[in-house]
Length: 133
Length: 133
Image (cartoon, rainbow over the protein chains, first blue to last red):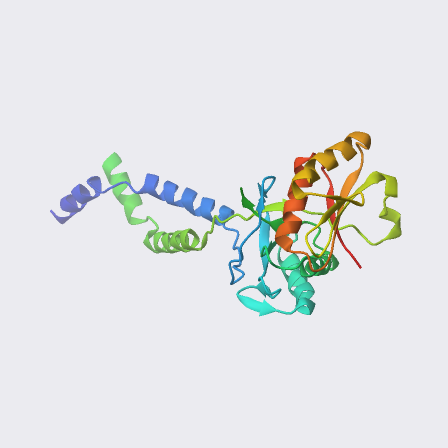
């Protein structure tokens, strides 16, 4: 009697195998696409550019505020520490590239200083953030 | 016969419920942390200081930006709107030349990006950035 009931229940059970397949595929998709972009902490006014393109590997962001302050990982940092932070990020992911998010009103001197520091840290690909016109 | 066999294998089945829980939690974690934000940016080269890679002066179109926001293409004062046409003319004369933007340290980053954008629109494939000493 008991056995028979159990068997009946089993027959009416929902087959979860297709759901599992989908869940696994979604899981793999999200693991692969996650890039863990670290927010800089400020949102500068990006300059407009027509030739700007979407950078695929730009996952290190460094921002410059209008008064030439450097921001990274939600903290204001000094120019001297840029190189150390970049070296650490480069060691973590050797394929990474840097995007400098400079405010329109930031001075070019600080942008060039940061680019030099990034080059010294061994990262070859540097670009300047812009917004589409 | 078949039924009995099925029942037996059901009893010896591995319980996948905890694995499902973990997979779901991972899925939710990755969905939440994924940021599809991609910075739009323009690529800039920073010329190396090593003398080996130093280019001949004849292969370079120099674009100078003064602190006051004036643009000089090959030492000739031009309007920002005329930068593109000027670089196009220079590129027609020297197709292999690369554009070097020499910017004053006090110039705005927004203006610099506009000039780089204009030179890229003019067809310069290789735009590098240098600071004025």
